[in-house]
Image (cartoon, rainbow, N blue to C red; front, side, top):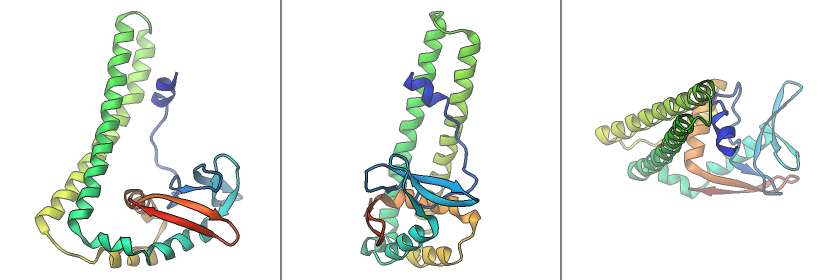
Length: 201
C-alpha cells in the first residue's frame, strides 16, 4: 500500500515556492509547509496547524543566515562540491528505489497478480519521476564539472546576498534548492517573539 501511495505521487513544482518549506520545524516537531489563505502564502504546521507569516519568518531566517560563520564555507569550492556530491548520492538512491518498484510491479504482472492496465498505470507513474531525478543529476554534474574546470574562487556569500536583496518570484525555486543543500533543518523555539535555531549541513 505504501509503495502504491508513493508511486501515485506526482512530481510538480508549486505555483509559488516558500524558501524554507519542509525545512522549518514547528515547536511541536512537525514540518511547516506552504499554506495559502486569502491570496497570501504563509507557513503552516502539518500537525498543530499553527501559522506564521511568510514575510516575517523568511526575513528573520535570511538575516540570521547572512551572519552565520558556517556560511563562510560557501567560498570553499571543495566543500561546495562535496555538498553537490551528497545530493547526487541521494538522487541516485531515489532512482534505485523507483527501479526496484518498477521490477516488482513487472513481477506481479508476470504472476497475474495485477492486470496489464494496472501495470501500465504504475509504470507511467514511476517513469516521469525517474526522468526528473536523472535531469537533476545531469544538472548537478554539470555544476560540479564547471567548478572543477574554472577553479574560480568567487565570493559566493556576496552573490547569495545580492540575489536575496533583488529576489523575484522566479528565483524562489532555485533558492529553495540551494537552501535544501545548505540547511539540515530550522527548529522553531518560539513564535512571539520569533526565535529559531538553524542547523547547517
